[in-house]
Length: 252
Image 1: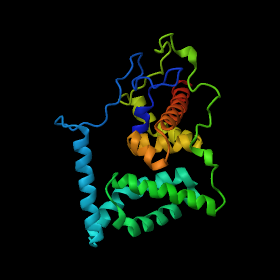
Image 2: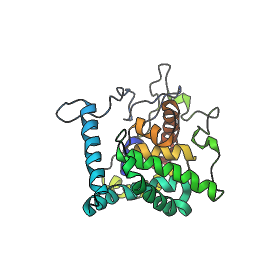
Image 3: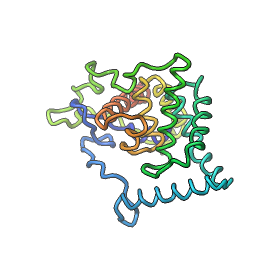
Image 4: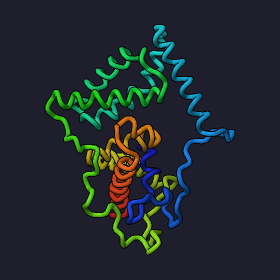
C-alpha cells in the first residue's frame, strides 16, 4: 500500500476536478501519460510492451513452463487483490482459479489489442460478476456508479479559495523522520481498513489505479466504465482515503 499513501497526499477542488498530487496550492500539470526515459513517445513503449506480451503468449501456447511461471508470478497476486475487491474474501480464490482456467483456454484468441494484464483483468472482472450471480451475492448493476453522487462534497469547499486553490491544504508528513518510519506499518493498516470500507466501484478503481498502477484507459477497459465515471470514482475514493489518513495523522 506504499504507492497509495504517496498518491493520497493531495485533494481535489470543490468542482470535483483533481488538484495537485503534492500537498500545496499549486496545481499539477495534466497527465501526459508514460514517457520512455530516452524521450521516446509513449506509444513506442506501448508497442514494445504489446510485442512482449505477444511473444509471451506464443511461448505459453507452445507449452513453455518458464513462460507459465513468469505469467503466474506477475499476475497471481494482483489478480487476488482485484478479486477480493470484486467478490470479497469468500469468493476471491474461486474467481482467480476460474480466471486462470479461462485465460489458458482463451490464449489462442488473444489478439494483442490491449496488454495481456488488461485482458486477464477483464476476464477476472467478468468471472467475478458471474460468481456473484451464481452465489446470489452479486452487487447491484449500479455498483460501478458513484454511490455518493448528489451527496456531500468529497472535500469541504471551505478548504479552497475562489480560484479552487487550497486555503487549508492536507497536512504533509514525511516517512524519513523516526516517527514517520514507525508510522509506516500503522498507516498501511489504516489505508487497508479504509480501502475495504469504500463502496465497490471506488475500491475497484483505487486498487487498479493506485495499487496495480494501471492507467485510466486500462481501468475503463477492465471495468467496462466510461472515463468520466472512472474519474469520479477515483476522485471520491482518494478523497475519502486522504481524509482518513489526515484524521489519523493529526488526532494526537
